Length: 353
Image (tube, rainbow, N blue to C red):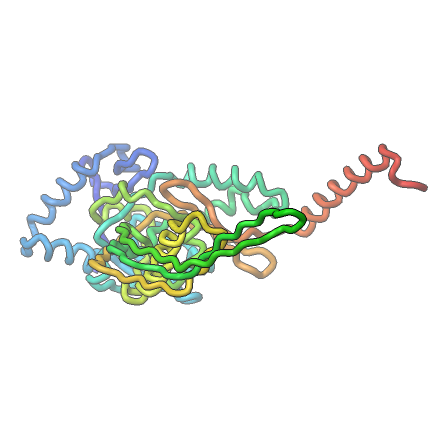
């Protein structure tokens, strides 16, 4: 089964979603179309198929018209349509990929479209690199930035009501002088707080390959930009399917919310010298979860036998990643700093010869 291609209404060429203009552009005749125009065209095409029920059509669109690829080197799994040039694996640079079908349950409900084009992402990345004096010079070069890859990362978004209470001990310490004696008075109290909170859009990435800490640094995303999922948004990008369902990521979400709720309650205990929480209880109600794709620009760089992975929020431009250090540039930089300090100290007469 072939992958889906969104064709130009005017000339029949492939359409690609452009982050900078938020529309779909044909690279052959340069026609531009809004989301409404693309959706209307897709709807007309779908009406000609024998399955008329909306849910059947949507399921068929993702299950039969999308193709998965598995890297033979590291096992990363991605999904894309045939307007994307899969020239290398964004994790290990291995160019070998094997197509295979995707199951219908991997169809997302929502998506935040890319807001930053590849050119803008490269520009921001180069500006970021220039602020890092110890990076290898080739790190931010144009040849390296060709490996910059736009990928929709699978995320689970949780909404839930949370109730909780904390109990503990607190002290008030007062010190004063009476005559020639300083007196310290300590009073002990039992303290407790209880309350409720509503949490919406708590994210947890659904990919084992994605570094959780890396994805956490890229947050927050603005969920006001969430759109109903359409395969058309994947045009020109990769999209990874989840390999951890919402039940697998739920424990880390509850731990995060439990800690946050305890902090919220504890911070309401004011006016004491010390506070020690001894017991807490947090419960979750009306938990709802949705599956969505969030935009991330990925960049991998191999330096001295190690692969460094960087990520940029495709909506806000926020960057996260571990930096490689060039020993030669580090030596030159620290040498220059040392020479400058030496010159200053020598001018001040602090070195004796």
